[in-house]
Picture (cartoon, rainbow, N blue to C red):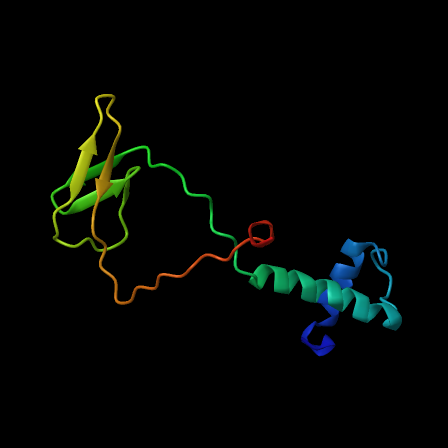
Length: 118
């Protein structure tokens, strides 16, 4: 992103935040690229895809006819009319196996970590 993509007000505010200048001072021309680089780094970081959240166990799954809720929220995907497998343990915990409908499915091998490949 060229320097021209940042207006003077944005550069000035970031320079103050970085401590390059004090409030009311002018931003020296030789510091503009440094401040623009900081702004560009922030924008790129914001555009980076976030790592997926760690999976958690559902507290409660409710199946009522075709309505499925997970922890009180509607299950957001279409479920096939194929039979569900529901397993219940004596303590009330259990499992639900169902079939999700999708237009496309990809099965990819996860990347190996460097420690596994050594």
